[in-house]
Image (cartoon, helix red, strand yellow):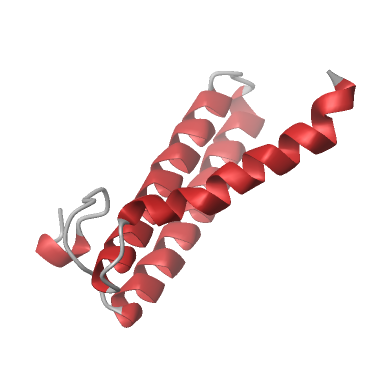
Length: 102
């Protein structure tokens, strides 16, 4: 990748606050710009497979952010499993909100 400290999918090690924020911002900008580019291509080609490319970009971005969160937890001398709490909470909220629909 871009060096040991810029590994996007590395779950071990540590990360500083500054590097964390820079990587979060760059990841979000990259996800948005690539999605816009793919949607622009899809508008002119009308290929439904483009949705899978957008989904893959978002999964890669979320995994990258999750890895950053784990490394930040390691920096605070905590287990990286704590980053799963908001994800589980989000799924529980979605289940309770959308539960009656299904």
